[in-house]
Amino acid sequence: MKLDLTKLPLGEILVVSVLGVVVGTFILAFAYGSDSSIEMEEAEEVAAAEPWQRGQEIANSFGCAGCHTTTGDVTQGPSWLNLFGKTETLNDGTEVLVDEAYVQESILDPTAKLVQGFEAVMPTFSTLTDADIQDIIAYMQSLSEEFAAATPTPEPTP
Ligand code: HEC
Image (cartoon, rainbow, N blue to C red; front, side, top):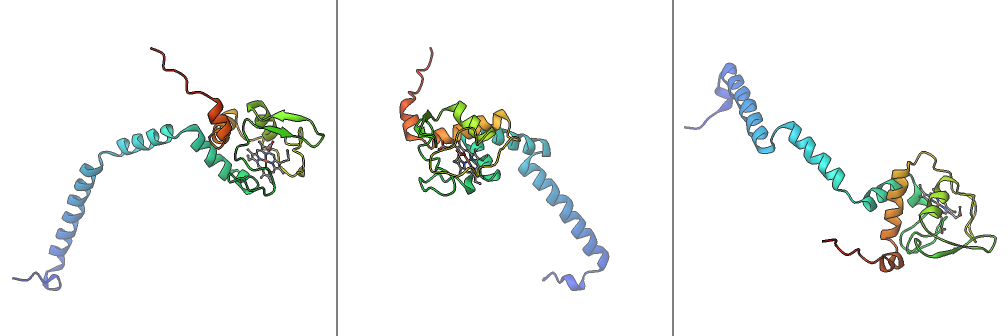
């Protein structure tokens, strides 16, 4: 016998659809667990993100990437490829090591030290927290071969 929905009385169709929704909800609830466990999984995912990954997200969402490439190409600002750990020449001819303090100052007070050959067009990012800046530094370190090579992996302590 073929089930012809158009021939079923409206009441029966309603009962069938309501049953379908109820059963479907139970199946979904069992398949995915309760809402709270979904939230927990998401929280773990965020916490598990590496600092450099958060730094990359910050650099994209704050527009750093619009002026700083990570490929070595120079656009409005110096590229971040192999920037961390190198010696930068400033516009007054002095040299400065690109370390955490220098990067932090460059972000919070961009005109304090101007890189030779560049204009003072970088805005001040005073809304970035210390933690954000640490993540950006981790991102820059991940882009720096020299830094990665100069930092030996610490021996595991027994
Ligand atoms: C409008 C373009 C622009 C944006 C947006 C921008 N910068 Fe810059 N940045 C520059 C320029 C130009 C320089 C070089 C001149 C100077 O030292 O200020 C620079 C220099 C720097 C330096 C020093 C680089 C070196 O070679 O010594 C760092 C670090 C830096 N920026 C980080 C950031 C971060 C982090 C962000 C985002 C939160 C950002 N910049 C956003 C244009 C920009």
